[in-house]
Amino acid sequence: MIDRRFMDRALELGCAAAAAGEVPVGAVVTRNGAIVGEAHNAPRDLHDPTAHAEILAIRRAAETLGTERLTDCDLWVTLEPCAMCAGAIVHARIGRLYYAASDPKGGAVEHGARVFDQPQCLHRPEVYGGIGEQRAADMLQGFFRQRR
Amino acid sequence: MIDRRFMDRALELGCAAAAAGEVPVGAVVTRNGAIVGEAHNAPRDLHDPTAHAEILAIRRAAETLGTERLTDCDLWVTLEPCAMCAGAIVHARIGRLYYAASDPKGGAVEHGARVFDQPQCLHRPEVYGGIGEQRAADMLQGFFRQRR
Image (cartoon, rainbow over all chains, first blue to last red; front, side, top):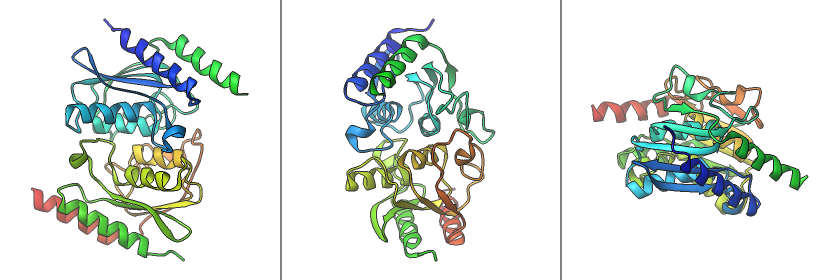
């Protein structure tokens, strides 16, 4: 049973990113059924090229829990993580990754660098793709259509 | 002509990491021959699984320059970047990457995910490996020998 409330919250955060002029991606880290970190994409606002939703949510969860290891935590994100974020998920030892839309251009889970499939990968989360996919894809398409 | 002073500084930062009980990796971001961001590895101290030397140095450089794009900048780091850091180098649009020791276990430049070699990779820095390699390898080996 997948609790879709957390993906709903990630989608809400993605909408907030769009309203702030950022590419609409939202992420939530949960532990024992509660949110311990959440964020939306914010590289422009923060002047930080690493400020993807997943990185910020992981950093906030680690700060909240006072540890660099998020072993018992799950990550919910509206877009397939890129190589940077997939690498961060490995370092954080995230238990389960749930994502919505797949990203053939920038994703590195089922595309490109396929970070978790490398023989050298030290930690592989369980991966569940396609949760709330259509809503996440609509959100991204609407954002890019509006800016054209 | 490669200006080795910046790798010397990265090695110094790596030594400071070891003294603080962190895996000894140091990184420096330069622009027009001056340092605009530098850091050592600090995930334990900061309770932040993303706090690799490269990520922190890139974030500091972007903050200093007030932009998320470090197009005219170079990154000097004592160890081959992992997938997370290679991805951050892409997002930051780093011009040249200089690294010291290669890392068959965790590196993602010449090993594993080979982030810059993916057809979908949006930006490829010029890459120079093996600058100060022996000193960086000695530093890492000394650190792990001491902790055994």
